[in-house]
Image (tube, rainbow over all chains, first blue to last red; front, side, top):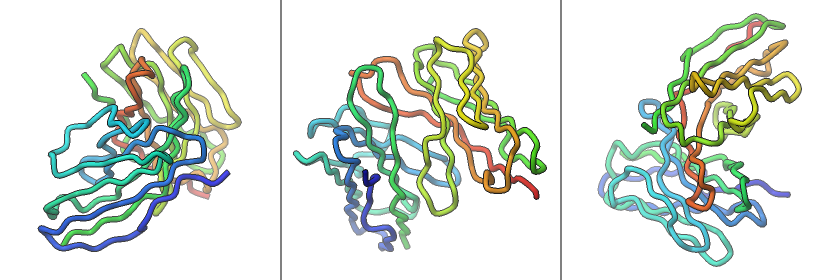
Length: 114
Length: 115
């Protein structure tokens, strides 16, 4: 079974621009979560989508948004990019079954804001 | 209340030795405690996980020990190998799966296993 895929893998953007990152979950997984990883703040939860609805949201500004499509694929968008948004953005997918918590991560998208 | 504290930040172990990484949490509502392994340029990979109703779980060379009363859990890597050199993250998730998945991560431990 194919793992979580993320596109693009690398991205360079300029301050003030916006960016859209894409995530395809493992087949059959209906929950998609996004995390930001930086050397200073570590791994931080952004948001989670299930059945096209945002189910949880972390403590990030409204410039960070996302959506999920009917095939469970997800996108996240960051508007008005700031230098501090440079990070590895990770997507994780999971089954939604009783007491099943395992989340499987993709390779991430490395975003550099200049 | 949501914080997970991990130690040490870095660890050097000789090949064949035991690597021990510790985590402590504050929120007693956490119900699931996974460990992830991350190599440079890769996403975190789920290594092993435990629920608070057991005190220990072993998978191959990897063991999680869980102390519910102390709100601590640890990862033991037996017979550590150079290929185990990576960054390890502990994490915790809240109890109600219907409320969604949200992992709170520790700060990470960079493990180096010397040949």
